[in-house]
Image (cartoon, rainbow, N blue to C red; front, side, top):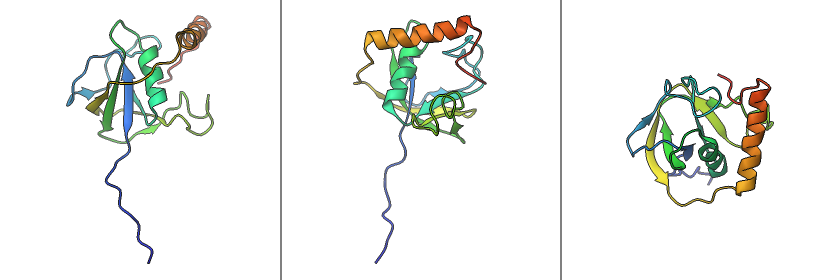
Length: 139
């Protein structure tokens, strides 16, 4: 007898940031972007891997505390073209974007950041690209 088992678990998505949010809040487009020229964001980003969310929190602009939220998309999501096939063929970071809000449903409060020298190297690399006029985020 072949039966497909139903799973009570949905895909978990994370959003790394320095914004102070609460359960029930919505992350929406139109806010100042955490990256690039700090323009109004046309897309918002989420990932299905904790590591990518940690990078999001560590690289976000601002002085706030690094936070990682559990989020639910409220509409369609698509592969993040800033990572997919440009830096990582396919989508191994499971990084996505959307024009639809994400609802904050929880927060990951215990996580291990990357080593300080690795974060500095990443920020230095992004600064070098910015000097060359290359933006990290493509809207």
